Image (cartoon, rainbow, N blue to C red; front, side, top):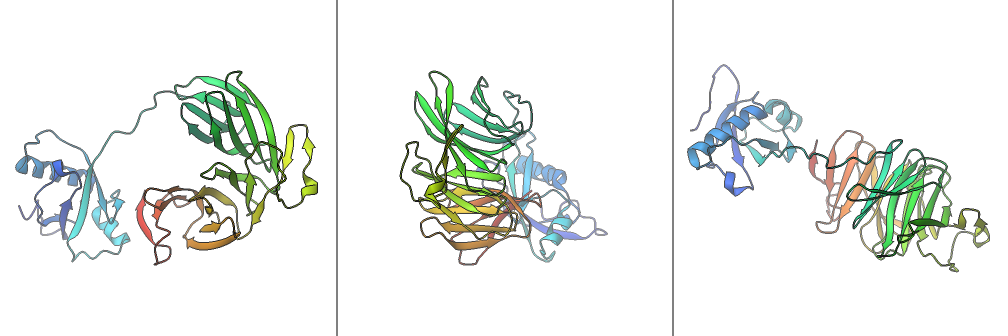
Length: 343
């Protein structure tokens, strides 16, 4: 089966199918197809091959990847964009396509939901109406928490026991607030109001031992704060600014780090002292929180809107203004090496 529906008036290209799902593997030999072939035609072809080479008789729907990117256009458009020669045998990976997930429940808010964090059975959300909400994972609403004066852009859990919990919310009102929640009484206290940013906050993240947190904001600054509830004699930028307020004790940052040129959009800890940030300035920066400096920088083509880090694979996943999701390996010696791009 060397040629499939060959029409000599249409340009041809040779392809080879491969898959990591062994139950759907087909014989490994090149096939000639027209260059304008699209996903649904490839799907028909794979199913024909499966019927010939296995006991699978039912139609199965697949997704296709070329150069680690899902095929969403014709093959010729895709390989042209990726600068792949039509003289080469093109490897096309296929994976079983699953239906999109369907929501089990809907947690209704009065305005846009701009932040979410989950810890065990509890969901913490932040909203554009300046309020926080606590829900169970089964969708039961437990508490609404006012306190901020502008939309909440990020939330994170600090600790959780059977009786109490603590968490932080970051807002466009230039503050991050640390809260204590008495689960048994379902009541919340504002413990500290973290002040120091000069523009709205966009991101907050807690380190691995839950003792310090990092925030990023539109003032381009990365700031480090203590998460401790008790009154501690911490080294800050100005101990004279440690004041009581009607909403709780004002807390100042332990350290401020400068390096980004535009808003910091995402913050994540990669280990006990290392922080990774994304920014609208098209860069990802890796920081040493103890030394207070930049260790490494990755550069993109568009603004980064968010990021996360996997301690399992040691890779960074990012969301960008060009609608792409990218994976980076910060350990790479080749600089800003992109390992995979998906639409």
